[in-house]
Each structure stands twice: as C-alpha cells, then as structure tokens.
Image (cartoon, rainbow, N blue to C red; front, side, top):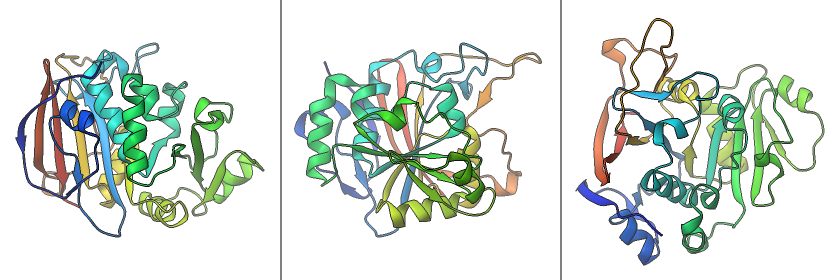
Length: 274
C-alpha cells in the first residue's frame, strides 16, 4: 500500500522525471531536477523537531529510531534512490546501518515495481549503483551492499585505502588522492567514471558537513519526525551537520522548494546556496 502525501507548497523548478502515475499520485505531484551536464547532488535526512538525526548511543544510533519506520519517509527515500543515477554513503553510516544495501525496494517494497518502472523510463539499470566513501579503506566487504546481486558496488578511497582493500572482482575501487579525498574530487571522479549526474547522498552528518564546506551539495530533502530528542551533558546526540560548524557569516542558506505532509511528518526540500 502506498502512502498518501499532501503537497502544501511547491515552487516551479527543474524538469519533471517520468514518474509512473501511481508514484506521482502518492508523492503528491512531480519530482523535478535541474537540467544540466554537471553533477547534481541531493542529500536526504530524517530529523527530530529539535534537529537530531541520530541518538548516537549503542543500539539506537540508526536513523530508524528517528523516523520510527514511517511509511511516508520510507516511500520518499525509495523514490529518491530510484530516481538517482548513483547513491553515495560513507563508511561511518555503513558501520551503523550494517544491513542496508541502498536499493529503493529494500526500504519500501510495496513500490518496488513502480520504482523499477521509473528507472527503466530514465534508462537506468535495475542494479542500483552505490558508492561507499572511505579514505582508509577499512570496510567489511561482506556487507550486503557489496554482495547483493541488486547492487553495482563502488568504493571511493585514497591510494592507501585501495592498497588496504586489495584486489577484488565484485567491487569497483576508485582511487582519488593520496590520503583523504576531497568531496569535490570524489564527486567529480564518480560523475566521470560512473557516468552519473543525479547523485543521492545518504552519507551521515560528517560527510554532509564536508559537502557543504566544499559547495558540492545542491539540495536537501529533510523529513521532520514529530519527536523531540533533547540533549544533555551525558548525551548530546548527533545533529544534521556534525562535527562541522560554520561562522554566522559563512553559514549556508537554503531556498525552500517544497513542503509536503504525511500524517504528522513534514517533508521539506531546500535548494542550497552552493
């Protein structure tokens, strides 16, 4: 069963993707992106009302403790994965979300056929291209994202990280830089070698902060879950951008593109000033 998402505000922007009618109806309208030949990076997060994206404590670090598995949030996450040429995430997120393969149908199976129809209409392969960013190369290559037949896995790493990973037939290893690749170099290399323009980031707050610093992320899809996590000296939680901090005069600003509602959850979309 698909959720019913209500569009409260929508700014005219971009070229609509060829959504199947049932996806468009459930999403509350079109999903559009700017046209162009350069990489377009859009991030997706779920946050509490007070800006916590992870409780950051053993057994409750996953984003599912924020979203509570809400159907509207999972549906949109699947839709964004289906729309993307490439999904990227980081080694830290992989350690927390050990079983995630980043496929659309894994997060919302009820729309699997519709997600596949969208990918086919966009000329994308059924196997989802997923890239994990890890400068050190310290990764569990037995994780589902590297072994699933539904995923085309990539690793973006340094030269030292590639040496640590060693030869592998299943995973494409992309070497970028000597030590810690910049986010811009990683994105440009993936756009070039993987042939990807629409790039969805499901990386965590640290990599998202680096993307903001380097000006390589163009949009933010942000689900606001109706809960308050709070902070204390003993448990500060993890914010949307963490541990990066900006001075007031350099803090990135966003332009509101859309506001949607699914039950008591708000689904916001911002263009970021990159």
